[in-house]
Picture (spheres, helix red, strand yellow):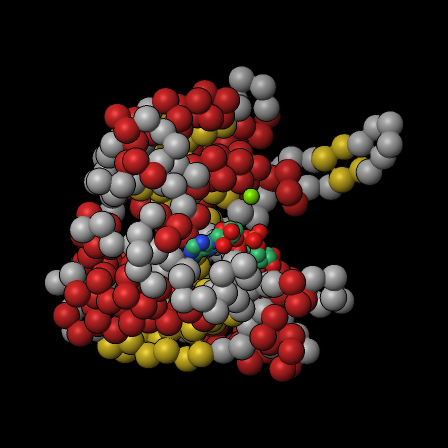
Length: 347
Ligand code: NAI
Ligand code: MG
């Protein structure tokens, strides 16, 4: 079976880290007998320059026909303040793909604890996944602007909660089998609905998954005090925005962190969490790990190739353990030499 990947390198360091991810994907395709087909499309600033649209219709169609979409990064000073913004393409793409769950893993590899702002003993064995609801809640409710009084509505339906909770429980089955659902049920009505809906789904279909509720203010503390206690952390849009940014600094560099966005069906959107990093673009020093681990998530969640995903993750951990790395994590490698070190460890 040939798996079709819509490949969107984008702007700035996007093409550099995408090329690295593709080299690693090709290496793992060989060791794991996978047939991967890439169709490359214009996206973001590059697409504004050539097609006058950050998400040209050919790109959108190609993404909708693919088994998975891989994205580097978009944006840059060249397009700041213009009428068309590259980031608009990203929002439109997420909408077109119907992705309502954003998955952001945070892990600290053995031997890399010193890069974390946490104390070494707290940074040990950190390996959790935040599943954030992406298309509901406060960010999509009605608003009333005002100088003296203003109002933002937070609305959730049971259906919106259940579908993202299902993704969290299923992800837990592929990991350590634990879900912590985060809410503010002691105050908010939407959180009480959230809690009931997640409880009901757990009872009905996921009793094999260890399950708990944590209030969001307590979770903000626990992510610093005891991050190694968690496996999957499920939460709504606003809380997830804040907690995932808190989590993103724990590993020590934004260049290390991958993400996935999923909806109904297997097709997802996979991208490193960093932007186009215009300050280092073209210097060959972008950390490729966020992109490479995003490619691993793509294999696991969209392309039914979990063992190949494990092989990539193990190779990244192994290269880090050998002290390899780009300058953002204190190493001396270029993007290319770091990528080659990772490829050499693919089994
Ligand atoms: P950024 O993530 O591009 O860069 C922040 C800092 O982290 C910079 O110092 C950069 O050099 C460093 N950095 C980022 N990725 C790195 C990597 N792989 N290796 C080593 N260091 C890395 O965020 P910034 O500077 O706020 O935004 C730059 C542009 O990217 C803007 O146009 C912004 O709108 C866009 N952006 C796009 C995103 C996307 O495509 N999903 C997400 C965030 C920003
Ligand atoms: Mg944010």
